Length: 207
Image 1 (cartoon, rainbow, N blue to C red):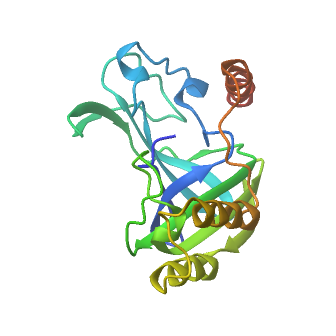
Image 2: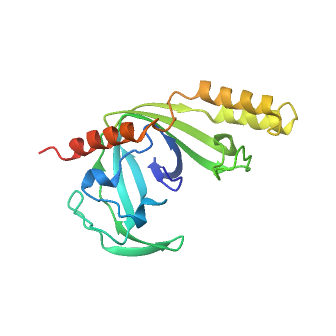
């Protein structure tokens, strides 16, 4: 999942930094088939919203090449250039989603404490970190991890932990994994990923 997906919660825009099962929803569920060129990141950019506890797909940007079927009565009209790549945009889709699992969202970037070479800023780089738990697209629990992330930053700033030391690095990783509810590991095989996407397609093709 590319880390430029966003979620609107209480009129505030958050960055989605991780979700279970890799995808909240994949465009393939709506009949948008990735071409060879668009298989490279980013294939799509989603903006999501929570309205009345219901998780919605609000906007969707996909590469300009390929088919663009109607989604919830909305057609892709505009074309934008993002990071040098042309996209078509679905705007105000308001498609209810069936996502089950957790999503971590972040706001108020504090400082970059890079822990690896993935280019992804660790969750404790943000002042506000929320973990949202969904059941069939309905928000059932919100967990605020902001204080835990502050604790990590303070330990680093005070010299009690160092990201350059493997032992401290592992301790921080363990603390994060034990603190968050969701399992954010990627699929262990392409077969399991395909199975998840096939299940998703059935959910959105019900008549």
